[in-house]
Image 1: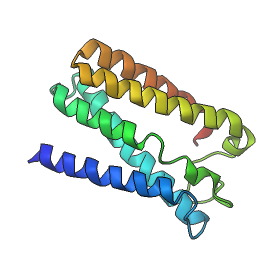
Image 2: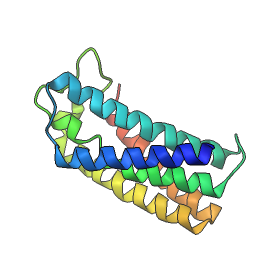
Image 3: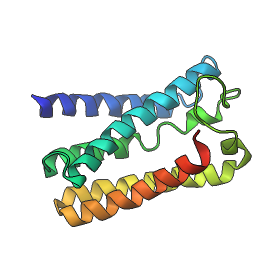
Image 4: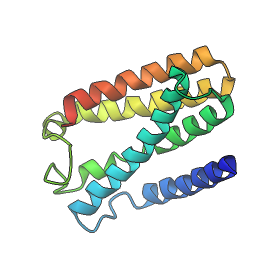
Amino acid sequence: MLKKTLKTFTVATALIVSTAGIAQHAFNDADKAVEYRQKALSVMQNNFAYMGDMLKGDMPFDAAIFAERAETFAALASVPWIGFSQEGAMPGNNTDALPAIWDNWDDFQERAEQLQVDANALQAAAATGDQGQMRSAFMTAAKNCKGCHDQYKD
């Protein structure tokens, strides 16, 4: 049942991702852009944390579930970034994003692009079923996430 629910969620996410790609700037206002990026990042974080818990031994390791979570993470890795470029979507009372994002826009974009590369590598490692490869790819992505959060998130 969980597997079927996760697959349904993954398909729904893929549809959202494809729709988001078509309507890249289709936000009514800056608050909608912030909400969009926060929700995408939240789903990414939930999947990433689940994989981390497996690798830490906080829950039983299941290579199939890990691969599904890695697939969802990779599918979402390109989604939130457009929500940072919407006019007026800079930090405010409803976001932990720091002004440094917009002050260092090129670096922020490079980090976002690298996360997409890292997420795809994690998905590929997960497909091998080799826990060592999964751990290595996970740690690479985690290092990127932490570096970005340290610099750009309150």
